[in-house]
Amino acid sequence: ALLLAAVSGLSACTTTQPIQDVEKQVVTSSASQDEVRQAIVDAATSLGWVITDDYENEITAVIDVRTHQATVSIPYSSHDYSIL
Image: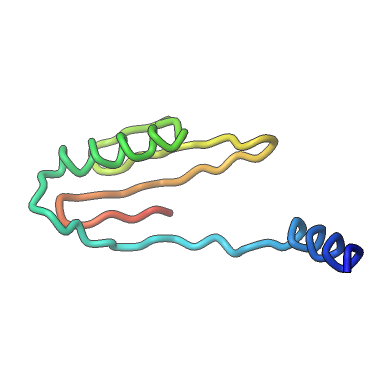
């Protein structure tokens, strides 16, 4: 049983998950584009992401976890946002 648990634990470390984009998620409150931008920046930085680019309607954020790095593009408006 111990050997089975060890093998199962090791195999869980090698599995990969596909990257899933979040597209056109509706902003449920009546917020301005600047308020949506600030909410994205606040949420990202509170989770350890670093904002590397901040254009008029798109934010780029990066996070480093151990030896890995992820970069996302977050286009947004007052109506919706995506995480790509």
